[in-house]
Length: 73
Image (cartoon, rainbow, N blue to C red; front, side, top):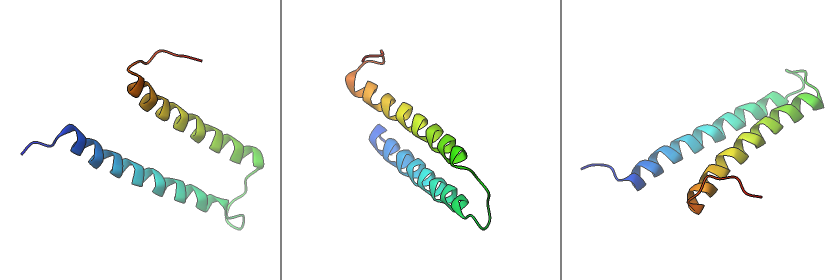
């Protein structure tokens, strides 16, 4: 039996979400000051990049719900 679009979405979204969460947890391990040396600026750059990508990914879902991909303020 062929997999439905919903089933495919659930399977892939769950796997990718779990992988993303695992990677974020691994990134958190870098906070160990006895093992790593970093500045507040480094941390800011890391989380700014992650937040920007998260915002872009979320906007793709929002645009899909609106039926449009045009920019709006």
